[in-house]
Length: 133
Picture (cartoon, rainbow, N blue to C red):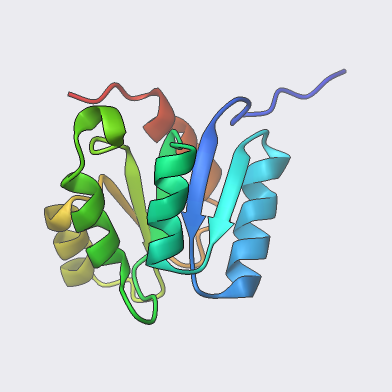
């Protein structure tokens, strides 16, 4: 019997400065069929966004240099056809309600506290299937 892969055909841009987290979460998403691009810096994420727009953006909030908040602000300033309305998931090791509220207010659509391994596939699948206004 062939197992259905939840994220088949969904492209994901994963941004995290932790190489281990990039590897683990990237492998998890790929195992469910996602085509995942992984980057460790905001500047690389913006380049990747322009060269191959993903269906879902997943970004850590704490990234040296420019953080995930800077990234989402820059994404939301883009025109819709350039990815400005891209579904975006914030992930963070600081799982407090205040940071969640701030992440959503800044433009992220969803927020997950690390570790995200048990919840990320379902969250990305839901985000990829939800129409944007």
